[in-house]
Every structure is written in C-alpha cells, then in structure tokens.
Length: 338
Image (cartoon, rainbow, N blue to C red; front, side, top):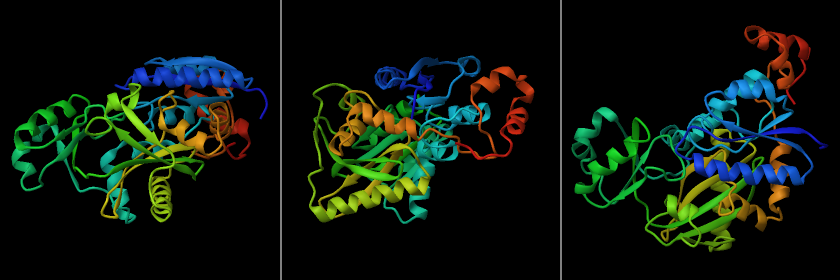
C-alpha cells in the first residue's frame, strides 16, 4: 500500500470520548509501526479547519458515539474529498440510531427483542406508557454506544429513574424487552465474518464497566455454541450488517438464548480498538494480529458518495471554501472514488 499520510481522528464530543482517546492512540501507534506518516487529530468543534490544513491521504476514524460514529464526521470527510475508514454516511447514521436499526432489522426479518420508544415529553408518564410491556426491561438512549446511560429495570418503581438517566444522553429513549441469554459478538471485515466471541460479564449485563475495566468480564473465543448454532449466529450477524449497509470493520452484538433463539441487538460501525475491545480479540482468533487488523482497515479507506470526488485535503486547502466541492469535481475529471 506504500507510505501514506494518515490522520487518526479521535477524542470527539460524545460521552465516549475517553474510550476514543485510547482507541486512537493504539491505532496511531500501529500505523506508525506500519511505516505511515501519522497525524493525530483531536476532534473538537474546529475539526474542519484541522482537516483542511492536515493534507491527508486518508482519515483513520477512531471515534465513538455522537458526531463521530453517526455519519456527521463521515459527511464532512465526503465534502472535503478525504477517503476514510469505516461505513459511509447513511450506514453510520442508521447503525448509531438504535430505533432505526431495529426497524430495518424487522423489515429484513432479522429477530430483535421487542421494544418501544419514548421522547423527553413522555418521561412523566413513562409508567403508564409502559403498561403491560413487562419486566425486566432495558432502558437505553436512542443514539449512544458503550452502554452509556443503559439500565436494566426489574419493577415499575425503577422505570422513571432509568428513563431520566437515559435522557441525560439523548432526547429519546428506547425501552427493550430484557432477553436472558449469552451475549455474543461477531466481528466483520469488509462484509466477511471473522468469528464470534462470547462475553460473560460478572455483572448483570455487559455495561460500561464490564467493557472497559480489566477483569470485569470473561471472554470465550470461539463462542461456546454448537457448530450449527455458531454458523447460524455468523449468518445472522452478516445479514444484520448487510441490512444497514455497513462496510469496513464492524461488530454485531447478539443475544443467544437457551431456547434456540438468536436476537440482533445492534451493529457497531466503528467498534472499539482498545486492549480490552472485542474486535481485536475476534480478529486475533481469525489470524489478524493488531497491526495486521489496522492495516486491513486502512486498506478499505474510501469515499462513499461517488460523484467523481477523488482528491485529498491538499485540494481542499488550496481552493476557496465556498468553491471547494465544484473545484474538486472538475479536477477529478469524472473519475470514480478510490
């Protein structure tokens, strides 16, 4: 692939900033070991100016959560003509939005736990709206990751507080039926399944602490399933990933019950790459050490919007801001995106 000037975008404005900082530094070090010219770009409100000055060949996205994983930064990179890793604008937005993801899963006959959504205006009457939905239930922000703001409630008295907690992170909440089963995560690279890992958290569910505090979860790779069920889980994950249109490296989280049912929970379009993250563990089982995984992710960096944009940030820096997009399109001469 040759030496490239790669910007690692990390940090960001979401509740997952600390995780992103750890992911970004690990990826930056791997890219340096691979021989690339690495520019660390701490994402804040001025990221558009930083990108215009950075003169990048590609952007390696190490962001998580709102503004980084939801299509916002992807749209900016499309406008600037900078190829980037991961999914495009639409797939990123759909994967980040748990409600839309579940609606698409249902359209594609992909099993997912029953659910309903609440807005901030519904918080005061959430008990009445919950009705006969039953307990236990999972309450989570509609658009957050890393189990931020997620609660498991077992009775009516706990529901209002859980809804208020989730509303701290989003203006809409998803209430989901709690399904008891094994938590299984499937890693994918460019649409190809790498394998499935079983997560056994020491707590009630795979919450933020279980994900990032060493020793709080046990991991079993491959997941402890029969060969037939293992193949079924991989197939279900591949369908869920394809339904949302995710590309590059992704991770699908599922629940596998003793009653022979599998449920898709969500697709992570920019999965974590910290030392305790699941995708590197899965990839290692498929023959990818950390550096090889980072190399493969970078190899998939591209523009998704089409339209002939094929320039880097060097063009964006040289052209006047208002004329940047037309100028790049003329310069590209109608060729396809790399």
